Length: 137
Image (cartoon, rainbow, N blue to C red; front, side, top):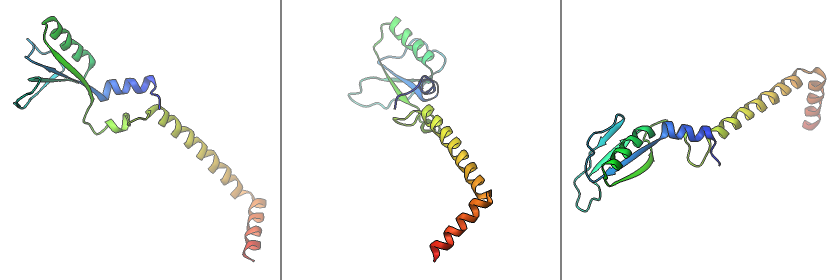
């Protein structure tokens, strides 16, 4: 399903985080950047791993790496949080799901209201009970 602007904003604000890998550490880390320990493995491409939860923090670190002519790699991934499947279901739009549920709730409300009106109508009730008696034999 196609994502709306609201879905994209939710994902950018609360779901996505930017992983930045570098060969050497930057001179200073901007606010909002977290360092992740990398195990020492032979053949490892990048030595340092940084995680930015906001686009602004990631852009500040990337700008600093570019200014220092450092080699880096970025990757945008989903956070590991309990609320991620709720606000960003895979291959689905939260906005369209909410709209569908609202229309379904309104429809169920009016159907139940109509059935209540039929159940309170003495003529319909008498005809319905007569029909059941005839069907039973």
